[in-house]
Figure (cartoon, rainbow, N blue to C red):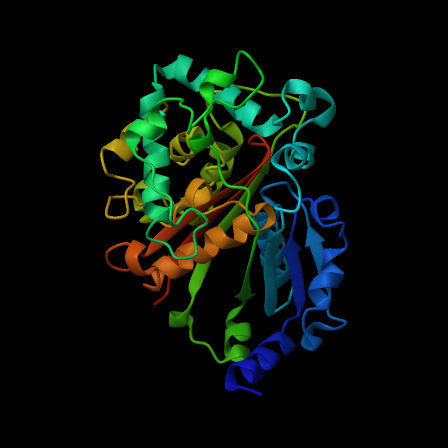
Length: 372
């Protein structure tokens, strides 16, 4: 047994509870009951409490929230995982599976690709509300791919996208929706990637850190974790992310911090317009000004508030159940200087994540502090 394996045995033996975020494992790989699957990955987890948490694309963030609740209720070490396998089905069949995150009875028929159509609808509303152009939104795709090119773990690490390519539909970058009204508002480069992936981490109390032989300066503190959920059956204002804004406001209020205090952010850019709307909902830009935040350089890796430094969902990939966990780990890695070519200059002291499920229906926002 290697030293690393022995350490893993010891660490997993200290886990009090485990949570795994996953959306549609029973559809993509014919496997539900993932709490028991997680308990089966290592002998040290046998017979320990373990459960799956589902909240569409916010499943990973909700698994974190469950872990935080477990620590508050007396646990010292919680194992948080997120996982999704999505490449077992065609894009069209997978689109139907993922449409379970919508109001299926009401919205499934909008297009074969339900969620791209729903966010094309948001793009249309956003552009009309604020006079934003297709080229303005394209800057989000260019930034996502450029950051992913610096990240060896990114799905699109070897693909480059120019502003010219992302700014207009073409044979290589088509409008692919069948919905006649919404098709002009979404291209391939506007979409996050269909990816397989997993992420995992420990959440600990101070007592849990001591059990694991860690010091606070080795870690990142979760200062606040806020969840907001809105009705699946109502759409609201399509030009803004109202549920995300509520979750962010609660997180800021709970921590006594403000958007201007944040030094790095991971936001849920399932589509390019979503990054713009996310940065507005988090208070980094005024409504309709998300693209200007990118164009000004403020959300670039070396900017005032770097956003999605490793490529985000558009460039890094979007294994749905893993995304919320991966976002928190990216903040951790930035704060500890472990991001290599896409490292933010210096060590960020404060950061934020926003993990969204469905069409802004379930949102988990976390605020983090570097203890190192």
